[in-house]
Image (cartoon, rainbow, N blue to C red; front, side):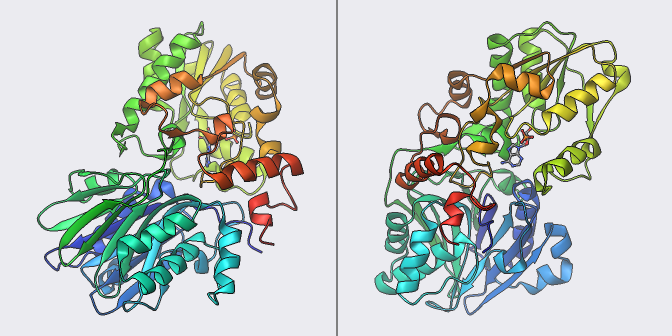
Amino acid sequence: MNCEKKESCGIFGVYSKIGHSVSFRIYNGLVALQHRGQDSAGIATSDSKKIRIMTGVGLVSDIFNRESVESLSGSIGIGHVRYPTIGGCTKEDAQPLLVHSPKRGIALAHNGNIANYSKLVSELSIQGRMVSSSCDAEVILHIFASAYEQTHDFFNAAKICMEKIDGSYATVLITGEGDLVAFRDPHGIKPICFGEDAEKVIFASESVALDMNRMRLGGFLAPGEVAVVSKGTMKRKVVLQKQPAHCMFEYIYFARPDSNIDGKIVYEVRVELGRRLAKSSPAKADIVVPVPDTARPAALGFSEASGIPMIEGLMKNRYVGRTFIMPSQAKREDAVNLKLNAVRHLVEGKRVVMIDDSIVRGTTSRPIIEMLRHAGAREVHVRITCPPVVAPCFYGVDLPTYSELIAANHSVAEIAKKIGADSLAFQNFNDLAESIGLGDKICAGCLNGKYPTKTGEELAKKLKKEGGKLKGCRIWEEELG
Ligand code: AMP
């Protein structure tokens, strides 16, 4: 069994009202969303007769070239980038996924993670619908296709999906007959925004993908909202809404700082996180140094609020990918040294406040601190913009289980010792919520163990009872084995 079906990805969908080919727009959108997934990518288009699809493993620019993008003809389409997971991914798991009926086929892509995946796979197999990939997008696709066959209504089909599926899913799909549909789970866990002008409608995980296509941000799908673009007209309807629970990790780490997620500019949230950290956990230091790139706006905020100058004392090699793709702990540590370099003449003899976005396993902080000391830093005080991550995520953020989460098993003082920091402080929950500014409309399951869905709660309980990892898989994946 493939242990990796977690899907924290990027999605894009476009409908040209004037019949123009959309494949280059999708390509642009996927390049803008590349930070959300470097494992695989794919594009599906429809010319109202047939769906064309191309997927591959790797970066968008490695998979597609001018000819292949051009060959994807059609005036509506969707695209997907898939997040890297330990153990890699096969082409079969790349999205969009396709079924051949009804309506000359449906191609679908989603961002999120289905928490009750195994239950739904069993239900589908009883109905004679076999799930052939380890992608949870296939489950959404089967449920949607079968619901559409019965109801002949996109809104009802999406509503049936929402009633059955427990988890996070920002979804885009096209039909072979030329419709574009987008929907967001009833808690709105994963982001999806849209824009519309006289010529086109676009949906995307993040607003940067609209910017890239010179499209103004029109809004965000509400939790439980469905948008259907058919015959050149968009209709939107909330079909099932529960307590909103937007993933706070989008603001901490995932999203690009130039994106607007659910009405909040990620850059501004991060600057504010830094300002508040400076007030709640000041440090006596000479310079503020961000761990690039995510923590840079926060370091600016910290510097502004503390009056300590921000210096780029750590430089990043931009050709090395995100360190989480490294399969083992040792390799992840090596990767830190490949990726970052401390600038001796900037940090030598200085007391440094090092700002980073999160500590998950606690692997990367220690070598970075060592690197700063090796370059002559006199003291290293670590300030983290996210509160301690103490619980797993069942909704698509690739966080490990309790046993691997350093903050689930150690006090702040113990973590400081383990990573070799002179002092360590995390953001407090209140300041996090205030910085995001969405009140109680955030999902912080990984910080407080309170999950917005029933299956999330059940899985957390089971996971605690059975002691975390089973045979190298996470428990909700093991259930399938
Ligand atoms: P760790 O070494 O496990 O503590 O990793 C923490 C670092 O990994 C943080 O500085 C983040 O920049 C990054 N990170 C945090 N969460 C994730 C995630 N779900 N996927 C990839 N990278 C992450």
